[in-house]
Each structure stands twice: as C-alpha cells, then as structure tokens.
Length: 313
Image (cartoon, rainbow, N blue to C red; front, side):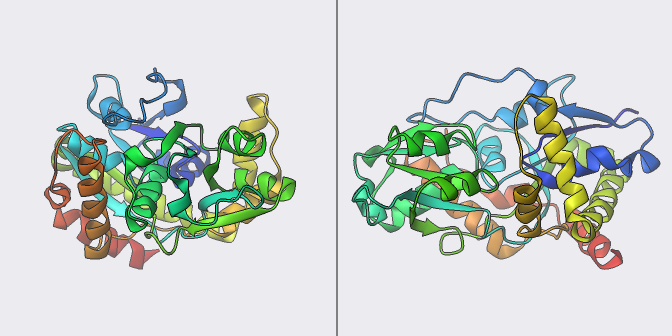
C-alpha cells in the first residue's frame, strides 16, 4: 500500500527526512505530500474557533497518513472531533522563539499588551504561547488585537510599526534582532516546553502498525544525522527557499538547527498536562469548538515502541 507522509519546513525533522531517502528503504511506496501545495483556508479569523487544517488533510481522501507539527494542531484536531493518536514528541524547543516588542515603544510587560496588536502565526504553537502569557498576566484573548501573520512575516510588520508585539521564531527572528533592539516580554522556557510532535489517525495506527513503526525508526535515524551534520541539513532549507525565489542565510539556518532538539521520545505526563492546559484555555477563550480530554489520544503501545527506538538510535 502507499503510505502518504505530510511534510513542510516548519517540522524540521520530516522536512529533512523527505530529502534523505531513508524512509524509502523500508517503505518503497511512500508518497510525500507537501502541505504547502494543498488548498489552504483564508487567514484565520483570530477571534473565532481555530480550524483543524492539518487534521482535515489527515482524514481526507487523498490526504496523508502521518504528520509532524508544533504544539497546537493536535489540540484543534481533537476539538474538531478528529480521532487522532499522538506518536511522539521532541525535547523542549525553548530557544526557538519568544514574544518580543521594539525596545522603544513603551511596552514593558505582557500586561501592557491590552488593546495592542500582537502578531502570531495563528493556529501554531505561537497561539498557545501568547495565550499562556496573557493568562499569566490576567488577560484573555479578547483583551488584545491578535493579528494572523506567517511565521516570518510578522518581523517586517513589527519593524514598520504595524504590530506592537510579535511572537518571533528563528531563523526569521535573527534578521529582526539585527535591525532593531528588541525587548523580550516573555521567553518560551518560562511558558511551556514547546516540543515538535507527531500524530496520526487512530485507524492508521491500528491497521498499519508496521508502516508507522518504519516511519518512527526512519525519523530517529534521520534526526541523528541532523545532529551530526547541522550545516548539511541547513542546506536543504536554504535550497528550498531559494528555489521558491526567496533569500536565506545558511549560517542562520545552521544556528537555528543547532539550537533545536532532535530525536523522538514518547509523550510524557508533563507534556499531556501542558496540552490539557492549552486545550482548556483555548476553549475558555472561544478558540476551540468544545472542551476535550487530550489523554483520549494516547496509545501506550506506541509510546513503548518510540522509547525502544530512541534507545536503539
């Protein structure tokens, strides 16, 4: 059977695996689905419930069977009644980004964001980081003017004054740091662990276990290669950006990859507690259609295999 794996650059592990040819040794009929080529909805209404964009493709005919994302998409999938199963998580990506503002605009704390325009890639981990930060400051989603930007586009908007604050991520944050002095309102480490994560449909997990295990094993091998060869891995991202007509700095990409954890571990109780807290806050702020229980998406036998594969690599 053909196994379809969804990938895009934001999940660094799957993007590199797509170019390494490792998975094809175990699954000759693997088909890689570039998420950027799939139909995408219009920019999200940042005041209403989040759509489950990634999981819609996971469950659609002709979609894909396996996906890696950031922190928020599996929560929105569950909130939109998608029967997903967690596969594994990376270590904390606490150096990946932070909530920043320009140093000269008078915003000193998260509490000062009331009524301000804050840029995020809505529906990504950035939504969760901002929501956690607001909650800690006694604010809610309705207290700010959230602006949906691409992961990197918000930097230019912060610089020209269109945004008052921005959840920036590396390597895009590097250019903004070079252009102006930034003030960090909240870093990632003080808010949540922010791992990469991978999930699949329950049907695929239950009926295609050998293929799922092959994907996990290939990811472990590829991630070990990234750790040993960060500059060569960075070149895949640079080449992709340049092919699409953009510009990219290999040094910035190498630094970004060196600052991120690679390797897949089983989901932990601490991670599930963070997911549940995020789900509860998203629902309370009208960003999730219903309350959910994230532990309904845990299959212990998958975690056992992930743990064994991590030891083997």
